[in-house]
Image (cartoon, rainbow, N blue to C red; front, side, top):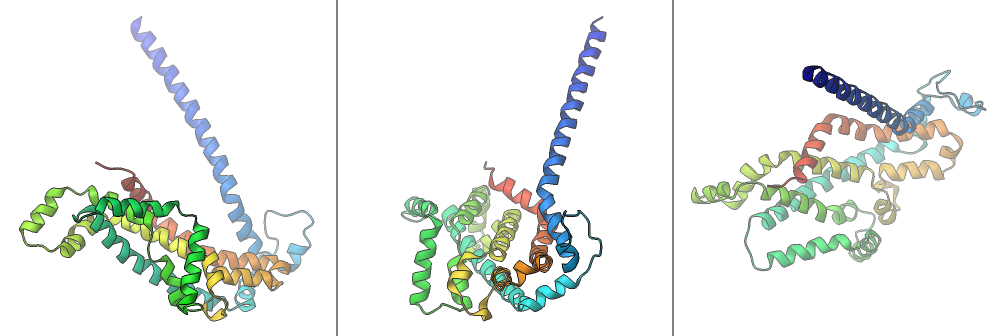
Length: 290
């Protein structure tokens, strides 16, 4: 009798679990469709011809006469290829310099001993409380006074560090046992060699995550490039999209505008899909200590 009751309870629990999981999957599927629909609509519109798009009194969820002509129009409306090259240079240089700065800073706060380290780190963290608008104004005044407006140096310098990334990497460095550092010092290993040979490889997932997030941040950068440059020779892809819209071409030819947005968004989408596991691993490591 007890065995039958146990079986009935197990079946009931299993049925509840199945129903709960089914409802959860349905909810997640609906939410995924809601999130992905704008991307689908953007790509779909980019393949619609100018005439068919304007003749649609009721929007269609498919392209009756798909065409790649909009992508050609997007590159001819503005020098989008030049803006791509500028963005690649800006992204690569900014990310590389930032990694050098934050790795050295995180190592200093995590392993080195010096007077006022706690106060210095507290002051550093307090900088996160300063509104971004105030920082932009200060950076603008500084860069302008140095005569670096409309230069790649002026674009790059204000973005070569991040308090949050220093904090995140410091937490990862502190997870590495002190015994490794002491053993390395006994063997005569320098701090720089220990950092490069031990700490950086161990914290590789977090460093990769920080790199990807910084690349995304640089690629999507809009306010600062818009503020510090008015010379088209230094425009980034974000400036290019705004230029297409302001010229009237993008407002009139919506499919071509969507094609330009697809082209600009595609590298980031590919980057995320390729490194999504590394991103999740790095974020989970950053939130765990001990």
